[in-house]
Amino acid sequence: GAGVSQSPSNKVTEKGKDVELRCDPISGHTALYWYRQSLGQGLEFLIYFQGNSAPDKSGLPSDRFSAERTGGSVSTLTIQRTQQEDSAVYLCASSRASGPGNTIYFGEGSWLTVV
Amino acid sequence: AQSVTQPDIHITVSEGASLELRCNYSYGATPYLFWYVQSPGQGLQLLLKYFSGDTLVQGIKGFEAEFKRSQSSFNLRKPSVHWSDAAEYFCAVGVTGGYNKLIFGAGTRLAVHP
Image (cartoon, rainbow over all chains, first blue to last red; front, side, top):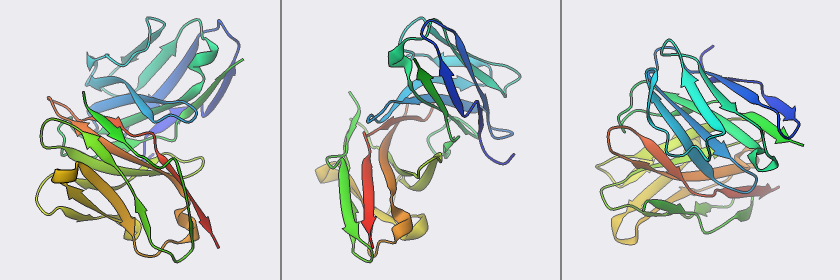
């Protein structure tokens, strides 16, 4: 498709389960970002990929969170042993390159609810 | 540390009225500034951005924003609001350092009365 695609769009999981969230960036975009949007909060940066490497993982909240990117394209955000405070919208974004002049395009997000 | 403040959590305006959404930033260097809009069930859409040059920038959907360095502000304006403008608006500062990392404000939710 033309935009950033995320799946699943909605996910309800039980506390303690692992979840995987997938992101397909815009074709040809080398930079990929994950953000988290909690209820009533702004967007919180999680991690940045340039190609398959992640130069900045500073926003990952705990070691239960991890992400990878393969083939310079698809990325997966994994949350292990989910907690209720992990409930949020997880937004993926991409840009053609990583410099500040490059517009960042966002997907529609994956709504995660931990019960 | 870099930060963005959007002082108004909720704003309600009447259709056809003018709109100004406030944004203040804290950043040591020359900022790259952005406004995004998020409609219900949709992703974030870029309205406009400021990198350098003219401090009044025009965006999509009739929006404009003015960068005021002395006030550390980047307020969003629209002369006449339409009902379809009801959404959440996010201001962001781009933190440079090799890549474009966005620091967002908490957002302002706009309601439009007919």
